Image 1 (cartoon, rainbow, N blue to C red):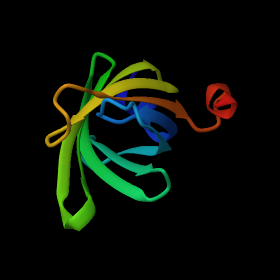
Image 2: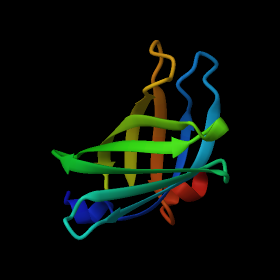
Image 3: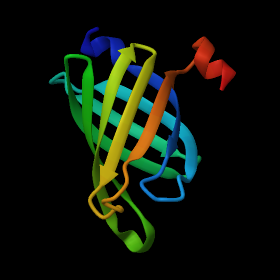
Length: 119
């Protein structure tokens, strides 16, 4: 798998970094900048926008992300995706100010694939 294979839009399902396993859905768009670095943009539950940059090696994608939360607070974190195929990414994530006892989880299906349509 190459870095270019990952470019596209994915439907995501995930659970937050908390004991109540609160679920969310959204969309992830992956692009490349002029230096072939990953540029990521998430829209979570249709309202929360997050962005990040990352790198790819040995079918592992790592993205440092940030977003503006309540009271204009900037939240930062990192997500690690195992690239199962170019159409399926499975990941876990943590935010700097999240509960350190838990990891968030996320699964990404490329838009238009059978798995994405079934979910």
